[in-house]
Length: 168
Ligand SMILES: NC(=O)c1ccc[n+]([C@@H]2O[C@H](COP(=O)([O-])OP(=O)(O)OC[C@H]3O[C@@H](n4cnc5c(N)ncnc54)[C@H](OP(=O)(O)O)[C@@H]3O)[C@@H](O)[C@H]2O)c1
Image 1: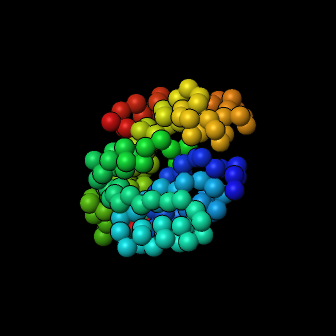
Image 2: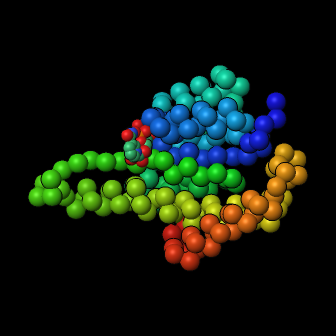
């Protein structure tokens, strides 16, 4: 069955658990191919299995968002992405005297740097001239490509202006 999101690809970071997993299942039910991201292969395989069991399309990519090289690899392996859900996050709590610089840096890397890296790496592809591929042209090019191009270009402009080097 063709749905509004058929032919599109959605990357959900932290799609192996909690909110991200629910979001991944929902996007798959709407017809998108879902790239489920997380660290734990077993949980990733479970999420992919659940999506496939309901007739959806999914694949898993493991990457620790604290590692900038792993984030670059995640973006490269995800390929062309239409929707990026920057969901993954971590919160370890400690009082200020007990907090460590390592803890601070890890939070900033996972919750702030990695999402910006992913936008930097993926948004330019989203804004590429339409149709980006035969696959998407078939499914969605005829609907409202102009509106999509405009909104993604706005995103690209913002990401490119504020953080020109993060995707590299
Ligand atoms: N739940 C809430 O009430 C609430 C409230 C406000 C905001 N949020 C935010 O909403 C998002 C999802 O929350 P949640 O409760 O669903 O979280 P969760 O159940 O703890 O799941 C977190 C997800 O993020 C992934 N993740 C964590 N650290 C990672 C890292 N270093 N590298 C790669 N992946 C990592 C985990 O993947 P693996 O387990 O596979 O490593 C998991 O899929 C988070 O950003 C959270 O801060 C949640």
